[in-house]
Length: 148
Image 1 (cartoon, helix red, strand yellow):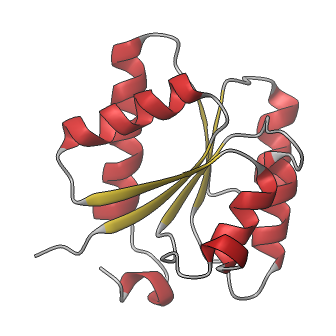
Image 2 (image 1 turned 180 degrees about the horizontal axis):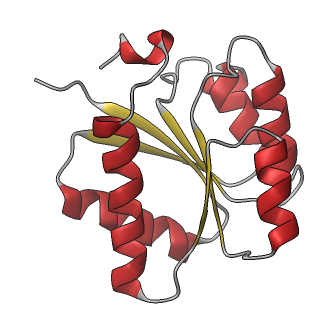
């Protein structure tokens, strides 16, 4: 039996949260989707601090770059600079298709950059593909592979 996958979605748009949730439910995979709406809560969740002290460590982070407070770029940089969390897979999921944003995300060591599709079927397909790649196809670092 495959253990439950813990996914952290950092997204301030309720509509996009709903779409991600629906796409994962359609997939039928054993997962728990945790949602935070800003950069400060994202970092607290990953680090298990404050109100997230008893939250599980995520297996995958889906991170929007346009957030209230700390930007997704700030969150990404802090995760990737922290020795304990730098191996955590972080995929940028953004409406921005700007080359400067894509390049900045990769310079900050994002594990992937996906532009949110505009069509509903394409959005579902993208979320399914991200899940399938990261949770069933990719070989994760030992710290995360042991959890599967």
